[in-house]
Length: 328
Image (cartoon, rainbow, N blue to C red; front, side):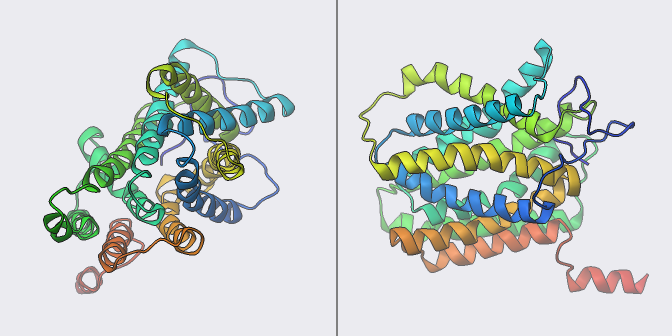
C-alpha cells in the first residue's frame, strides 16, 4: 500500500509498526474524499478564470503561495513539527515539482486554449499514467492480462478525446499541443505517485505535515522560476483574485490534507479513484458557468478512459473474468 509519508521522525498518530494513520478531523473520510473530488474538479474552472488576468506561471505562483501560507498557519496553530533532514527536504522538493509545479504549469498553460471541462477529462487519465510508470520503475509491479486490456482501452479513449479527424480537418491543429500538455501533467502525477511509493515507505509524518512540506517546497521552486517565466501583464479583477484564493487555500491547501487522509485510511489505489469524479464536476461547471461546449467524442472518450481505469483496478468485473473463476 502506498503511503504518502516522508522518512524521518514519526508523528504521534502512527502505529508501532510505522503505518500512517489519518489525522483526526471533524469530517469523515468519505466526506473528505467527495470534497477533494469537488474541489479538484472545480479547480479547472478557477484556472480558466485566473488565466484571463495572469500568465500561467503567475497562476501557479499565486496558487502555491496561497496553499503554502494556509498550511504553514495550520502547522503553527496545531504546533506540528516541520520535517527535518536534508534528504527529507530533497524528497519533498522532488514531490513539490512532480505533483505541484510541473502539472500546475502544464494545466495552466493548456487552459489558454482548451475548455476547462476538457482539461478535467484528461485529468482522469492519471491512474493510467501512474500504472504505466509504476510498471516501468517498480519491479514488483506486474502487467496482467486485465491491466493490458485496460491500458489499450484507455489509450483508445484518449485517441477519441483527441479527435484526430478534427485535427486533420484543421491543418493548424492549434489545440493538439495543449491537449498533449494535459497528458504531460498527468504523467507528472504518475511520476510523483510512483516516487512516493518508491521512496516514502519507511517512517511517517501525518497528512498535514506532508502536505505543508510538499506544497511549501513547490512554492519555493516556482518563486525562484517566476522572474524568468512569470513575466506578463497582470489584471487582478475580483474574479481572478477569488479564483487564485480558492485554488491556493482550498484546492492546493485543504484538499491536499483531505486527500492524504483518504490515502491513509483507504490506501492509494482506492484514493486515486477521486480522479474519476473530477471530470463530472469540471464538465458541469464549465458548461453552466462558462458556457463551454463539450463534443460527443470528448464525452465518449472520457467515459472509455474512466471505465478502463475502473476495470484495471478491479472496480468493475468483466464477464470473462467471472466465467473463468467459475470454471475453476
